[in-house]
Length: 106
Image (tube, rainbow, N blue to C red; front, top):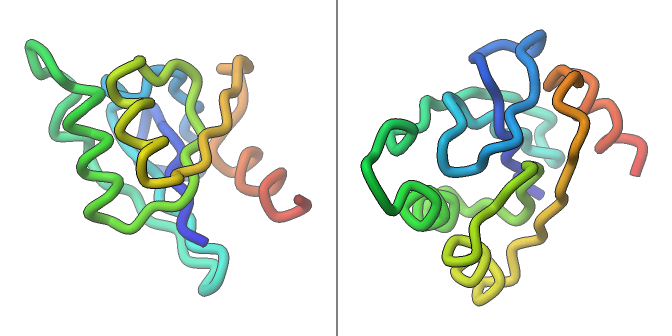
C-alpha cells in the first residue's frame, strides 16, 4: 500500500504538516517495498484549488492512503470517489519517522 504523509520538510526528521493542499512536501511510504521518498508539493503556494489539485496528484501516483490533518471538502470528495483511505491526525509535533513507525504497527 502506498501512503502519503503531509510534511513540513523533505527528511524523516521533518514535522508532520496538518494542511493537505498546502503542505510543503509529501512523504511517500510504500509498505510493500518499505521505500520512503519525498516530493515537493507544487500546489503549496497556489492561489486556489490547492487541495483539489493535490488530490489529483495523489491519484496519479496511485496513493491508497493519506495521513494528514485538514483535507478540504472538495479534495475529500475526489479522494472518496476513488476509495482513498484518509487518516486525520491532530498532533503536529510528530515527525514523519514517528508516523511511519505507527503505520508499521497497524
